[in-house]
Image (cartoon, rainbow, N blue to C red; front, top):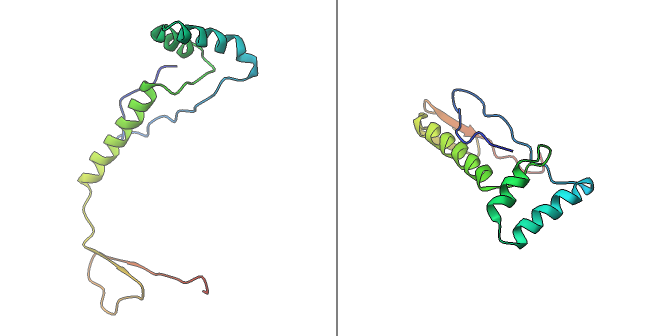
Length: 109
């Protein structure tokens, strides 16, 4: 499985990635993968497990993709206009422009 490492946000929504573990029917694939690891052939083990179309392993590429998406979101949020203030509790008597009021309700309401 290869991942699209670069994020398209905010211009587009990034494709969702589904992680799929191997099932009982994949015991031969897992045994071969483990034999690569046991022999210290880590690159071959990674290439082999990533070549299996129905298995989506957690790899450095997946973690890099997630990190790139987080960076794209953070970069976008830094361009957004900041809220001047937030008021919690009872509605303010004289709210200012751009005030966000959050009503705190108890569990009794």
